Amino acid sequence: MKNKNNFIKIAMMVFTAFTLQSCAQSTSNSEAEKIKNLAISSVNKTDAEWKKELSAEQYYVLREKGTEKPYTGELLLNKDKGIYKCAGCGNELFTDEMKFDSHCGWPSFDKEIAGGKITTKEDTTLGMKRVEINCAKCDGHLGHIFDDGPTETGKRYCVNSVSLSFEPASKTKKEIVKATSDTITLGGGCFWCIEAIYEKLDGVKSVVSGYAGGQTKNPSYYETSSGKTGHAEVTQIVFDPNKTSVEEILKVFFTVHDPTTLNSQGADSGTQYRSIILYKDNEQKKIATEIIVALNKAKVYNNPIVTEVKPLIKFYKAENSHQDYYASNISEPYCQMVIQPKIEKFEKIFKERIKK
Image (tube, rainbow, N blue to C red; front, side, top):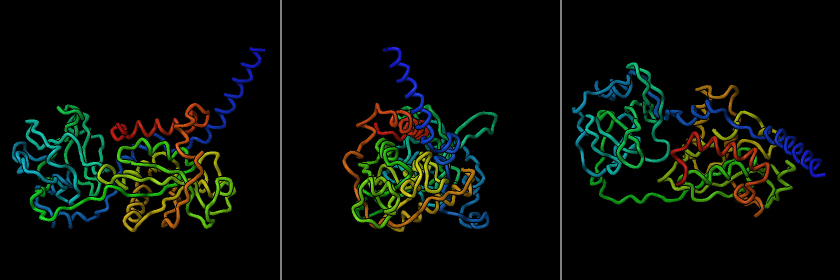
């Protein structure tokens, strides 16, 4: 009897694994890397325009990927308090607290300002493998990043001084108080998966599963599952904009689900499983639109993105049984075979952005 029960148990597990794996739909690892390092290039200018705005040396470094001579940069020995920005577009990249003297001849930093400010790509010039760093806003070349930093990050951002501008803290007379909380609402298939992933992203304060995008008031899970409410399964993400950004959150979003399948994710089919971004304001709409345009232009996916982008009218919190589902049911087959692989992909691609 025991052997028979074991056989039945194993058979059921194999069947469950086969069925559930079909639901574990997301981007491939190569697609995920492209998304993470995607230059949104919200600043798009012609070479003629760049040459007119930049000095000859700035153009050589930022647009032609050149390198300034060591120990010649104006910001190399700068110890003033303030913000280091991209000299091409003003994107805030580093603070004075991140800067250290590496004695290499170029300004060095041990980390960047959070929020996907910098993109990376492999550089095989000079007969060696290096990691190039570029501004995520204008795709301007900054320098390279190395794993020999002396601080706890272990990183050394080696940056051309001419690719940076510096804004002293004393320049701004009025104290600017940055918001410490912002919200965005996303749907990418089953909300259990999306919720579990964003709970691990540094800078995210809370994640709540719910329903939005439709017309029915106070919908239940069963009503939403019927596909007749117009709502999608979504997660509302509350985050600290000083630690992460809408851009980074959306890069994670496009990594952990397939935005090219209409009204479905794997075996989950219906409008309630559609890919959707529900923006809070026009700035979020602008960023979402720019990312989708950039992803399609870069041909990251084989098919065009069908993600719906619309304003959030009303968010309805889902039943308590759907909150923190993965954490509460971690041993369940769905959690192990569908959610866990998505989490592992996120942790691999965004390993430096996981909550400590």
